[in-house]
Image (cartoon, rainbow, N blue to C red; front, side, top):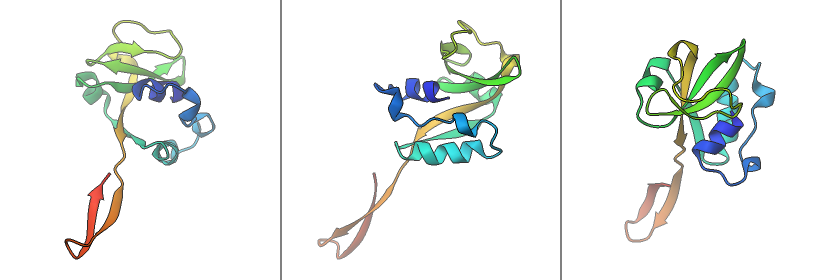
Length: 125
């Protein structure tokens, strides 16, 4: 997952992207991993396999790969754009997709004191 997220955000240093290896068997791995991703300004949102396969935006397909979860980055639906394991190329077989994930920037609410308005303004940063 770390390599797929790094690919989506075009990270120049993969070490800056949080790892999720210790969360693989955790029942709430996505929320725990989102806490880590929040530190770099992103979060993952789960989507259905159908929604991912119909998407025109890049998304992460979580697939069955010999019984283990495997994540690949797809674009234009089922076109494999990046596979960290380098086992899939071209079109992704739809029957392998468990579910999908989209990467979304987090928004932070920042209170700012404005003397011109006489109060606190809230800006989404």
